Each structure stands twice: as structure tokens, then as C-alpha cells.
Length: 115
Image (cartoon, rainbow, N blue to C red; front, side, top):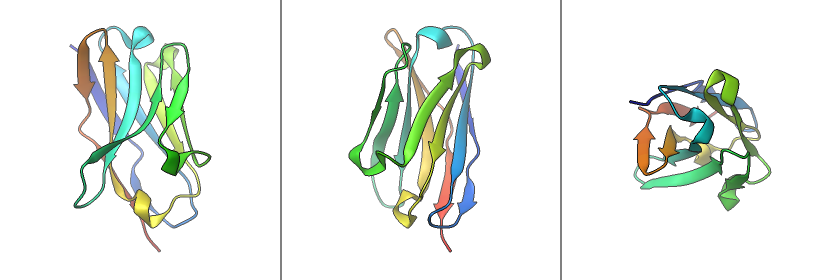
């Protein structure tokens, strides 16, 4: 059974930076497609970024050039480096793991962008 634990959220000022981590326990991290999602207040959960097992990345247009997704297979951990954050980035951020046909979700970490 895979368990995912996000960390690194908090309060940050507009224009600042934050790095989120997603630690994965269990087997299969090396072959997993990993992703970040977010749910802003009053909105549906939306996809933010994906990284494949080969390291190919993709981003929603709104975060391109500001956020960077990465992974460390030796540490079974995925990251989201958030630079130039904006108030509209305020949300609960979730990590997702897809291993073959199974999907797993973390509990989420709150990111608040405010001055």
C-alpha cells in the first residue's frame, strides 16, 4: 500500500517562494507517474503539474515559468518549487501517485499567499 505525505506548505508573501515535498512510502515510486493538484477556496480541484518516471514534465499554463516539479527516486520524494507566487495560488496542494492502474492521494498541505 502506498502512502503519500505532503509537507512544506505555509504562509508566503506575494512574489515569494515555497517548496512543497511529497514523501511516498511503499513500493513502486520509481515507476510512478507523480503529480500535484490543488484546490482553491470555492473551486474544484485542478491539476497543476506532472512528472513521469522518465522525468518528463508538464504544467498547467498558469504556473509555467514559475513552478518546477521534480523527483528524487532514491528518496522516494517529489517536489514542487514555487517561485513568484501569487494570491491566486492560495490552495490546498495535493500530491498524487499513479502506479500502473492504481492511484493514490496525499492529505494535502495548505499554501496561503498573502501580504
